Image (cartoon, rainbow, N blue to C red; front, side):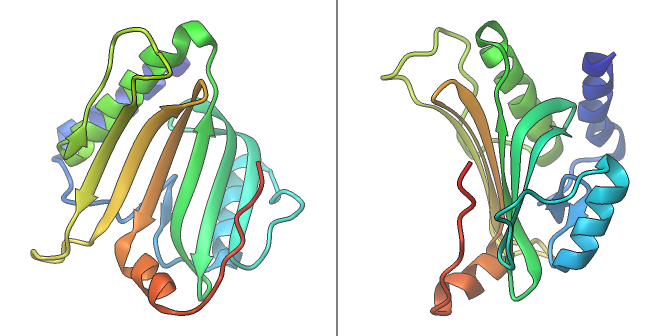
Length: 182
């Protein structure tokens, strides 16, 4: 049932037309405030942020992300605006590549791409980088800049979403931000 739901979610963008760039992820829009994000996630999952979450980073363990059990989701904020997230999915070793390829295919169907990298269907080895990157530039009609990265590292799938506009503000300011230790 989960695989059917995931397949349908991946096919939805094909039915509605591909989008130019992400405006958010996990049902959350970039620029949302932390209070709103926490309330939406609590209503959807019943979960509160993990201990150690703070004003710049909140984390959730053992949640569902894009139809897959995520061992961790980290959401990042700058000036109380959501600008990114990191997701860790740890499937069984035999499901690592099929899960990664399904995730990459779903993202590619929605956003066309990837712009760098691609899927890998062979054996996972320490010398073989497995990474796909979608980069968006803000040079068009309302197209946001940002990046989505999907990788296999240490036998887990890591997905990263970043809104480039807020991230650039973060980098240009002298702010330091907390990284949640997962």
